[in-house]
Length: 209
Length: 120
Image: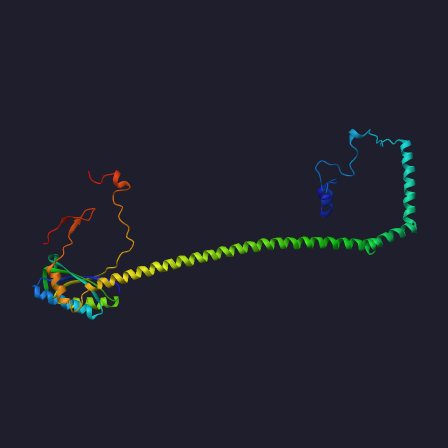
């Protein structure tokens, strides 16, 4: 068999391609368009939904009438003119004017409300700022008083110091009383090698070596 | 001017010589613009250890305290001068500022000290 087709490879490959292959299978198991009717549905007869002849008649009549009326309306010039007129009124005529007026009034009212609100908030704010300023002033005054007090105590302290120093300066050593002071110091040697109790009394004393 | 205390150890000498050295020292202080408040003698004592100074070996020395105010810049030169003095064994200068707002010691009256005796 193969020797018969030797030399014609293209024909052989075409022969080997399966015939009814599905190119793109969207859903697995679904039938393609050309597949025959299923065996189980072989005897099925399609019956359209039943229609009531009376009702059908009435509906048809009514639809005809409606269609007639609508067509008449759509094509009558008067009606068209009325429509146009109404639209014109809506857009530029008295109605528009009225609407503009209403909008202006609403705007005015809103602006008035806005101003009133601003006024109210302004009053609140001013009251708050006033209060804050007063508190600040109070604080500053207190600080000034306390600073003054501090300065006063400081000056007093320094004055006390100066007075004390002046009092002590009488016993300072100068060239004039130097010899006398040296004599005094040598005559009264001090000894700080002692222990004291809580009341400050000397408890124990170390003898000088 | 800050307050200083000069702890001066002189070599053991007789009273007139000691007087001369002290006079010399205080005059040096006054020359440098110091204000001398007080001069105290702590007597002659045995040194805690032998000190060699100016090629001499000292075992005893006279202790003196000088309380004075001076400019801080003068202290190094003063010490330098005292180091050169052959009768001075050891000069020491320390700051002596008055302490302020010293809180009294709470002692053992409060806290754990009372409930737990330190010595049995």
